[in-house]
Length: 387
Image 1 (spheres, rainbow, N blue to C red):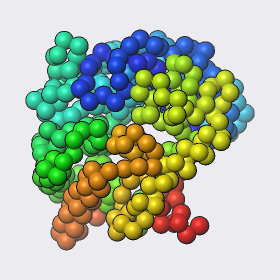
Image 2: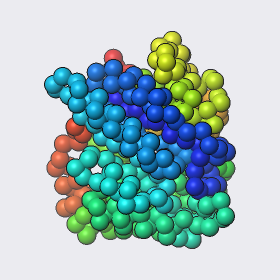
Image 3: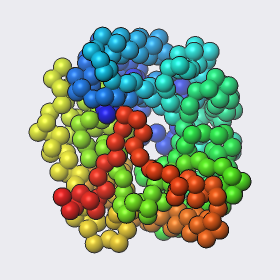
Image 4: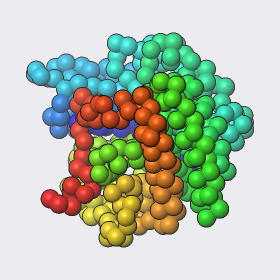
């Protein structure tokens, strides 16, 4: 599987306080650059392509997104059988769900929308505001309602800051009430995770775990990451890392300048030359790819003796950069937050297993956790060490 992320523009209609992409300015991607990026991705010959739109706010450029989609679909239809499958991924703040956007994303087109929602109104609106300082909660909720009505699949992403971490119970309650396919709690590693802040995270995760357990006990099941992933690490004996965590070259991001990065979170303002993997006119620099991979893997030496190593996501290069600005280097903040998530996940799993909760047992013990169509499971860290 190949995942191509197009970083459509640096501009955005919101001004979230914690945004890792730096200042907002207009630099949009040309159709010519997008086509060259698609040609590069399709040239890999993989059986599936995830075409992901990122920013900034990509839905500011709907006409361009539609043109890029048309080009991808036409290119695939011109290929000999068996043709690669295509899925659209849209990373958005959820405030621009117009009729035209919904028409573009609705079935039968295969698409998944990733929407940022940080919790109830008073929590979400602390950080996710427009240029006039107005909160975006109500507009996001309206966008989610409209997607549900059109049958468009969506996942929710909630950024966890030091000041919002103690309130994760309320946050998860709101997230799961929107009935997403999956909800993810994403720690803002650029925040100041002191010992006190990490205790606040543990408190919030305990409440979040209670909310998640109530969903299972009511007979439903939904993935709440990273708690879900931590449970899988127990069942599988290690971390099923996404391939991008290896800086594999199979997943890459292209910016409006045509430069190639390992993932969208490394782009920033597209001015850090040491993070660039290549250019759409020349392809990926394999020497640079291997160099960055080796830099990232330095963290394994630091983590080798840790008993939580095979359940931890210290391998994530984006977290390294957020914490220290350097691949392969982390701080104690990552260790503490990862341990908090593992503790919370184990509490949920141990409690529901002891109860023999039907929905929980069906979800984790009576199904095969295999790759989705067109994707793959990467080696566990323990398995990789043995090869």
